[in-house]
Amino acid sequence: MKSAKDNKLSSDADIKFESPDLDKESFRKLGYSVIDMIAEYYESIDDFPVFPKHSSAEISKLFDEELPDSGQDPELIIKNWNEKIIPNATHLGSPRYFGFVNGSGTMIGTLADALALRLT
Image 1 (spheres, rainbow, N blue to C red):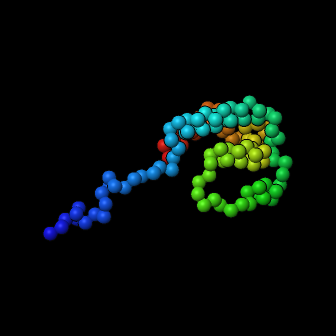
Image 2: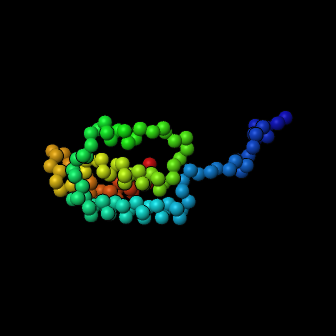
Image 3: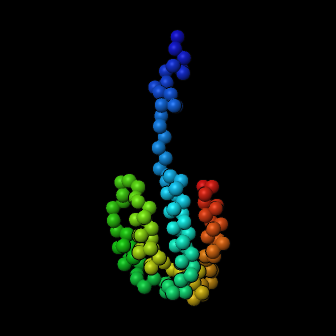
C-alpha cells in the first residue's frame, strides 16, 4: 500500500523557488541611490513650489498608460518618480507649507519608515 508521501508529485527539493527580489548587490546599489535621492530632496525642498503647478486632471494624464504585464526595471521606476511624482507632489515638508496638519516629512522619520517597512 502506498503512503501519502509516495503519492507526492515531486519532492520539495525538486521545486526551484525564484525570488522576485533583487540580488543583494543590486539591492544595495539601488538602496544607496534612493538614499542619495532622498538626501538631495531634503537639500532642495526649499526650491520646489509647495503645490503642483498642474491640475489634477493634467497630472492624471501622466499616468494614463497600460499596466505592465511584468515587473519593471527599478531604474525606470526611479526615472518616473523623478519626472512624474516629485514635480507634481504637494511638498508638505517645505518650510513654506503652512497647512494646519503638517506631514512627518523629517529625515529621521524617513529612515524610521524604511526600517519599519522592512518588516512588512
